Length: 315
Length: 321
Image 1 (cartoon, rainbow over the protein chains, first blue to last red):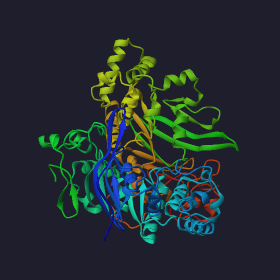
Image 2 (cartoon, rainbow over the protein chains, first blue to last red):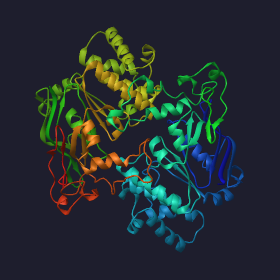
Image 3 (spheres, each protein chain N blue to C red):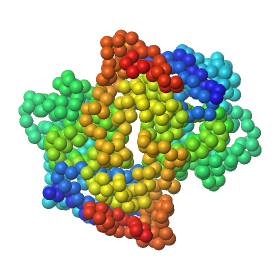
């Protein structure tokens, strides 16, 4: 396998009333061509910001992103537009992400307009794309409000894939959908991945969905990746105390497996990213924290091949 | 002892194209101290059921077209507004999905907890203050006395939901209705809030109606479950029975389309199609157009809820066929 995305020291800091909010803080991440990497963590941990940074939807404060060997952050506007053909994003909210005044055809074709594709070719490609995402041909001239949430997400997927990208950031693509519709969209994303040879960054807070679709999973906490491993290994033998707490918090899927009580509770809320705790950022909520955790930030270690963790105690 | 008895409840809404039923012929009982889970997707009518019971739907456009809601022997649908206000709080309290919009942003949380105590119990300012601090402590707000002067925006989503629970519990209700209480929260905070709700039930002994779209929340909390689809109850059972022997194809579909951490499969068992909107619901069985087991007759006649075992009812013509 070859690396499609190589991010080094990637950071995004926002200025917030005089303080700096470190949304993403020094992330290193390599995504192999053809793999799906899941990204999980609580809201505010920086997972959506990281997804946007990797395709330069927002500018980075520091660090570097290589896309297929090309330095993304060094591209000028015209070169970036050409590169964008190969990287796309699917958003969470199928209601907010589609312009209500545009027809489905215009929405799906817009990336092609930007790429300078001729009208006749656009027509053909839109027809083909509609079929691939399971929308009827008569959907072309309709408007987003005429569709259900699941169908709107199919429109969003068609728009993202119309330029035949290699890399797609899926930012909570099923979180806003009804449970019975989520599985349809997950299956569609799996099918399209195989059909088009896609590489996904799959961002979600639902650990079971992420495990289902991902080859590897990265766990983020307060702007940093704290654990990264093969999807099965991460769930079978999580090392970071935060990963363990996340997994323990997932509700049981049968009443006989109810797990009530303090042992599974992660105390408190995630601290503010504008004043991250010293040392290991998780130490304020960690049961295993020792003195060094409060002072020194743990480096990423590789305790078993391909399993990375940043923890003084379990690393 | 039966606390709440809902019988044949139908609520309609006036829409641009006429009157449409949001819920139809809903019947269930709730025992003292019991946790009843109501599970369903958008448009299933689970929230409308709760709001009808609470008398909180704006009329018009809403109208209770039939049925009764008997709470401790009195029919809530026949009560005057003043009498209903006395039921809300000490009788039935409710917490909502979005704790940010349920709390008033311009008042401190202390003022909001104390307001409920004053409305229902009176007491001196000093006694109200002490009771509010005690309630905030009970729901796990750290340094509660210091938090009394905080505004809602200064709290996290999980803490706001704790404050909502403190307000709901301030009058020691006999029934707590929790409408998607953890849907807006992270999974870690959801676990904290579900634990808290269970602890509070043990301590106060109230009955709880928990409304959710999440089968995991049901598995973690409920004693008994109602499954709703497109405005109707399609299955009701004790929680273990529902998970072990779901009878309605929609219930089995809901249980198997959700991926779990334990299993590995290449494809999820998706339910095809989409949920019908109120007003565009199909005739006959509402689930028939999406049902893998449907036969032509399903589209014609709506199957009634029928008994299939102790406490287990389901509305499907194809059970055992």
